[in-house]
Length: 441
Image 1 (spheres, one colour):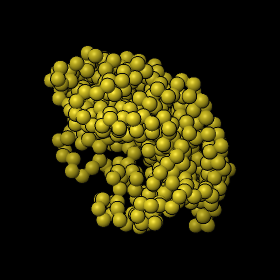
Image 2 (cartoon, rainbow, N blue to C red):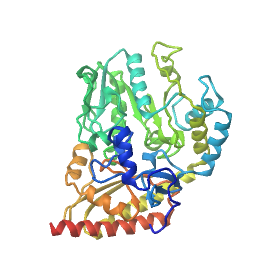
Image 3 (cartoon, one colour):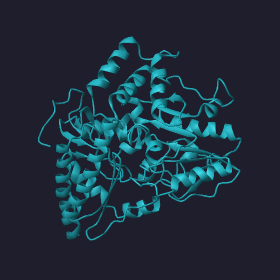
Image 4 (cartoon, one colour):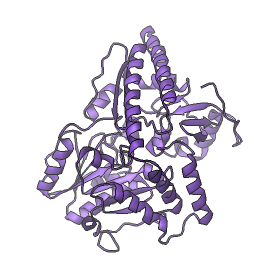
């Protein structure tokens, strides 16, 4: 973007050198498959610092960042409120393995903001939250079967990888090798936006109330309310996976936005302020089944970590309803202008927004995109294979999108109108470059 950071003091001087070094000691050179460039080609850049909406790599190149740690960063990188909170907490100790005030205050902050969520148990990741919520639902109901939706990603636990979105979809995996057939034997995968048949064998239905792991697919009118009614009729529990939507759509997450309350919630990302954290929660009656009070065992050495709880509390205390309203309005304008710019550049574009979440689908010149309503629709657009070209055209101009076509964009409070307008302008240039190259071939 025409501005360089201070040169790297971390070792090798280039992204290629760092990635070669990483591949020698880390499988694939990455600690999470979504960070790899396997679906877009090329070498990942290695970030050394972030500030606000910007990332800086080992070569000193600055990027306008729409990854924002896949939604974990709401205020922007290295926000002073978060940095100060983590610094104060670290000076007192980084982990204790005993109860701390921080875990209580973060749990209180979550419960105070989400209608119907009376208690939460803190864990260390969204995967742990979803895995534990399923165990709790099975323990509560005495049933084994679980319904999830194709394209919704709920972490990498064995029983939930079937039909997953996000990195699973990006890498073209049906689930994962190493998952025994028995682990998914009780997992039913249904199409998103269709209320499935639920009977007395089903323990729970888990759903992303806004699907942000097959890019961005919005819930159809009546879908979530229909799930609520069907679960009630069958005696099954409804679980909202709000690892992405929680405290990003608004103070009360999807429940406050759509007016539907699940029996259990899963949270992560924003509630850690950029540090590893997750949580699952529900009514006091449902949560009473957890050990030490009840028979459903769940534990974690670093659960309620004082650094993560300090960062999470700092973020939740810093934002207010007006911030969410402004961010949602800004994101809606950005989505509209982004789609128009890409289309004017010659590519097909479909851009959706739900609150501050933005989804971007791109297609070859002359193709009109209808925004998908399920995973099959999203996959049909992705199969045009335009995204890798567009991704690199944007990256070469200093705009960092996720290196996979099934990820949403995460404009945050640090992205001002100026940065968003810059991204819109660059997107038109990138689209024109890609369209011209495709027309030549």
